[in-house]
Image 1 (tube, one colour):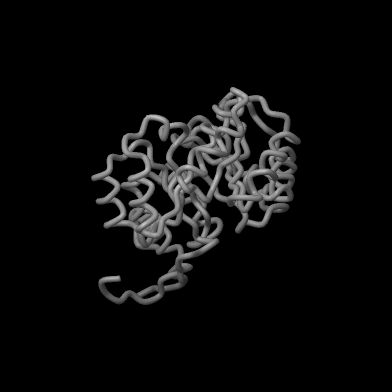
Image 2: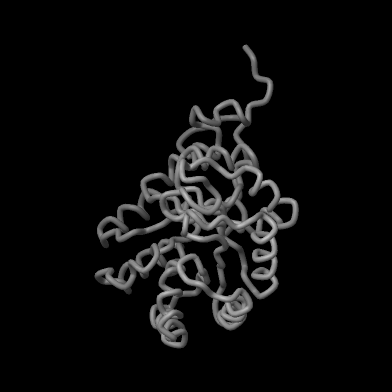
Length: 256
């Protein structure tokens, strides 16, 4: 940090399992990645190459290596997993993640109809070789999953070998955990937290108001995902109470 400020919340340090920031790369160029890691590496825990963008990304291996050299692991978005599975190419998917030295994998079913026991079987298989993140929730805004089902699926996926479960929101933050307006489904989140430990969940929260809501609910070290590359430092200021949205949240009674 560039200077001293007292009474800031204590942030976990990398490598960390809480206070996790997952960034979505939707097609950054090599030069953009170099600039991104130069400015943000210490605040980023993992990068997701969004949905199936890696299929089209130029110089993919080089991009992954730049992230890796900066101490930031990379994984392919869950939609790529689904694209392989729906084409009966699961073993080809395993070969792809091995080819690029990817040590994390996302298992999701947001775009396909996949029996949950089969999803858990994929988790068990992949967890033998890589760290699995599994995503719960649908990308279809019309498909409302009741809270008890979120909890059942999250727990089953953790039991199957997922390191963390991801609460679905897409890159826009308008499905899954959120209404189409971007408003948090507060009752859903609070009910999930009665059963699933918060440190095992990454909440996709691409919008600033969503990030603020989760920081106020769960503190500076809440796990957040689908953060845009240019929003990493702004998010960190929200976590530390250095932006107007959370400025008073960590100060307590501090009158003049």
